[in-house]
Length: 118
Ligand code: 5GP
Ligand code: ZN
Image (cartoon, rainbow, N blue to C red; front, side, top):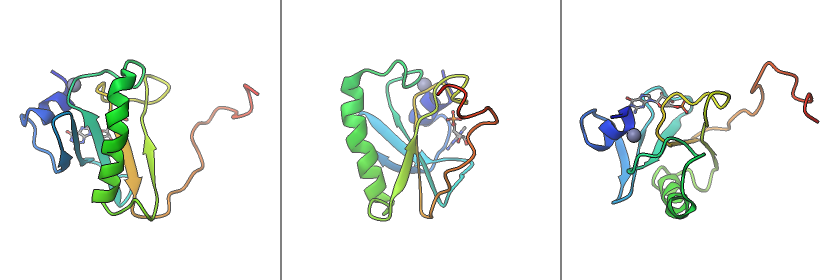
């Protein structure tokens, strides 16, 4: 069983922010911003590549609710999901990073030439 499935099953402790029948949101163990929350579906899906649009419909609302719960909906935030090798995905259970609580930078993503595919 993957690490996030274990968090869902309470086999691994986490700091939960919001939960319903289908989704769970908890603080990232290694935060990269004052607010760094992970939102996940309770059903195991490897990544964004495999997720059904029907799940994303309710996932969208859940992420919006997390932003409200963390009081960052008005000040602004960033939603990221890493996919696969080049996306630097470490945990193979679909998760959305929700960052906020401060002005976020938007700069260095890769050492490769960003114009090489244009
Ligand atoms: P990824 O690189 O796969 O997009 O992000 C995985 C995230 O999960 C990382 O930000 C990492 O800090 C977080 N993480 C990994 N293991 C745990 C854990 O056991 N508990 C919590 N709360 N976060 C975790
Ligand atoms: Zn899982």
